[in-house]
Image 1 (cartoon, rainbow, N blue to C red):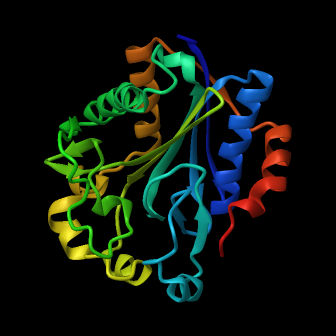
Image 2 (image 1 turned 30 degrees about the horizontal axis):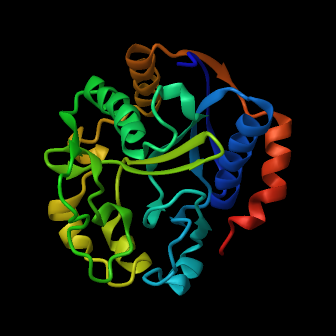
Length: 262
């Protein structure tokens, strides 16, 4: 494994710019043999991201515009996520880093998921990596575009509820995994943002958030440090604290329009 990684952030950007930065880091790894990266970031303003192949059906565009909520397209797949009060981080690395086949998507999910699960356990959660051995990917498929209303093949769960949304892309020997860990969720706003999404069902049985599981005691940087520590312990990673380079930012600014929807 490539044991030297950079850890960057948290940085505050628009949705389109955040997606473009991840794409720029992917390009840097692919074209310039750049370092593996874990990047933490926040959203200014709040943003709905949709999966790379997802249609906008089910997203209330008018409500988003009225509320000042951006909509951006992710370079990864999966369903829509409303990013507001959360810990967001991307893992971007050479595909051979994990020691598995570049085509073995589920195994890379498991390896990365194990370290994320370890990080959540370090902060006092009883998290587990659950491999769903059936094809029933959702709680209620009808009219529900939201990631946290769906169970993926390999999910991180707390008290049998999904606590993190992850989406991955793999291209030209580079893995990009984007992760959304909600601190708190405004389910009334969720209902406005997602047409027909059964927010009450998601809240009651499908998904959870840090503020609920930790009784409101959230230490953002403590969680960042736990993620760093878990990857160091599990994968032997040696992290270097870094910042986004001027080159990465310039490339991202030139690409940001490709990810901007509104």
